[in-house]
Amino acid sequence: MERVIQSLLEAFQQDQDLTELPEAEAFEAFAAYCVLNSYYNEPFNPDTYRTGGGNDLGIDAYAVLIDGQMYRDPTDVQVAMQERRRPQVQVVIIQAKTSSKFETKVISDLAENLGHLCGAEAIPYEVSDDVKGLRECLDAVYQDPARLAGRLPELHVRYVTTGDQIAEMVHRKARSAERHLGKLNRFETVEVRCVNRPELRALYQQAISTVEVTVPVPKQFAMPTAPGVEQSFVGLVGASELVRTVLEDDSGKLRENLFESNVRAFQGYNAVNSGIRDTLRDPVKRQRFAVMNNGITIVTRKMNRVGDNFVLDDFQIVNGCQTCHVLFHERDQLTDQVYVSVHIVHSKDEDVIQGIVAATNQQTPVSAEDLAARQDFHKQLEDFFTLGWDKPHRLFYERRAKQYSERKDVEKTRVISRPQLSRAYLAMFMDEPSRVGRYQDLMKARGEELYAADQQPILYYTAAATWYRLEWLIRNQRVNRGYRPTQYHLMALIRQKLLGPGAVPTHDKAVTKACTRILDVVWDAEAAEKLVVHELLPVIQRAIDAEREAGVPLGEAVRNERFAERARRELTSITGR
Image (cartoon, rainbow, N blue to C red; front, side, top):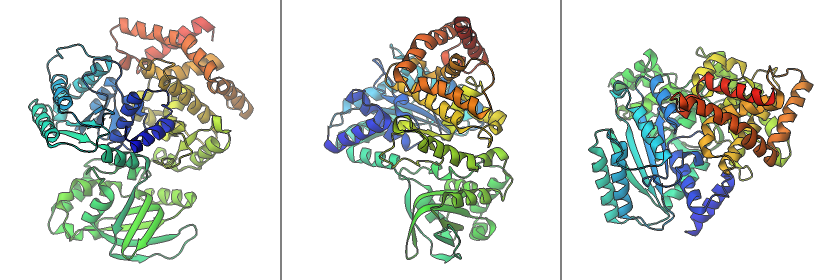
């Protein structure tokens, strides 16, 4: 393997705690991480998107993205499709080889296999469980054709090697594969691409780095100095320049991670956003866009100014999510006469930054749950995770996207995002392991109970540590990866086994004592493995068997309360608690 890729792969294995994987399998996870990060900006475990074993049809990793959210489990895909009226679906399939060259036969075989897999007919030969899962994901996508009336799914196939040159014949085979798969009439577009060594390096750097852009602001003026603010400017930016330099990434997709701090996600084409779109489509009105629209606010932690060019690094668009999405969608309508008003704030003070986020988002009605992300409790959690423990027990709570991506001293498997932490806490301490798979619904129902000022940070840390240990057991093959869908149920059972049933203590000393009892086990790898493998997996397996006898697949079973209750009863019958 080429030396630079070898070093990047080794660093990746250290970051993701995948050092025990053979090189070929580690490269598959590395390729999945690099490619999928260009579609999805949230933290994810790349090893979970790999396939395993034989009969995989040449597919080493895959994911299904629905309106920007990434899935691998068929039940997750089914639920996501049911929740959306006109979903945008992307299917990403990866084949990864450590070989230093691209082979035309690999592309031909993969195209033939995908023709069987992605078609409507039965697959004519035996395939692995992972590939069966991908077929079930596709079946879930096409289950209700009316939902796809606006646009069929996109198919993106990536063939990754450590080679440098891509021969003309390889390009021709890729185009032939596109035509072959296009004849299925199941996809809006089909794209088959080879990813060579330079592109792989670039994708990895993009995955681990914050976004840096240079945006021209020819019409601007400086705001007065303010405490905690390095510099602040208000100006006008050409709308097409804003899209090209800031909103659009190198692959032509919208940088969704820029809106992580904007509490209101894109709301679709409601009355307001439809009005913005209509303005941009009107040749006269769009010339008045800058005076008809409130514009956007950018907060950046690093900034250099060279003349009228602003170099922004580690930045977020904290207000203007709706405007940016419509501008991106209507980018073909933008002319040199369309401008957007922009407020750029350069600050390194996290309290100032969070104050700006809260203030800009309070100008329109926003729910208390939306603004909960900005409360001081999250800063307390961040400090508690990193400062309160010695290195072997240290975890990192990621309050903002890619906060730790460039920290070489931070093992990425020890970083937990807010959605991951919310799911872990809900499953372990709020008895909701069966509903975390429907995260948005669960947050609407119980989100206000999370991150309350009177809660003890150690409870969240304990949930995170338990989540980390289970991930470690699965990643290092101490627990069969087939049990991954039951992970949150295992968290609930760990709490029940070690603390017993009933409410979580509220008194400070009682909370600390209870959490210490759990932490003593989960931070002891041998004790944790013994508890999970020898005591809890048999309980989980009996619940799985009962559901399977009733004809309920595992992905669906773990999302019903019946499964959770059965597991609780099984554990109680064995332990008496």
